[in-house]
Amino acid sequence: MTETAIFAAGCFWGVEEEFRQLEGVLSTKVGYVGGHTQNPSYQDVCTDTTGHAEAVEVEFDPSKTSYDELLEVFWRIHNPTTLNRQGPDVGTQYRSAIFFTTPEQEQLARAAKAKLEQSGRWNRPVVTELIQAAPFYPAEEYHQQYLQKQNLKYCH
Image (tube, rainbow, N blue to C red; front, side, top):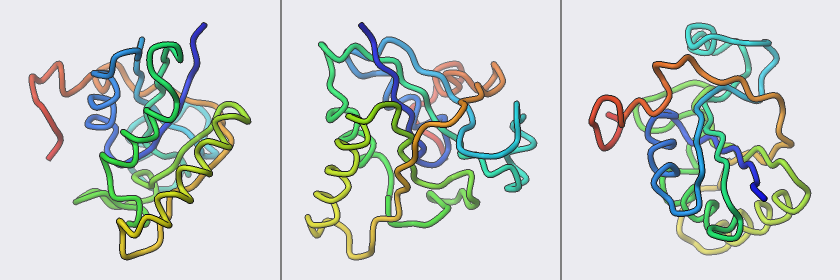
């Protein structure tokens, strides 16, 4: 039995690489989610008019890695207090968001966000959106496992 999780945390290349390396992750796919344009291209999403976020769809085996463990990675790899940006990347396509696929994922994501907010780790509010998963549109093939194909460790 597998489960699917969808995370947006800035440029999807680096986010995918972080999740791809986890034990229990069976596959990753970068793409676009949360907007109003059907079947958007990378060029469409870069206009910041589609409403889509760059995101990573993670298929995982919950007997080997839990959704909570995926959430821990999500919170660790980006700054959830910057609205519509991560590092040099600016626009709504780079927003911080968790697109939950089950009621259990929603509950766990809300609890994890509340715990992070109360931890004092950040001196600004956590702006991560928690949203029911919408259609996920895979990005073009050249974006899939981009960092691995380029023999790079990270973006920027």
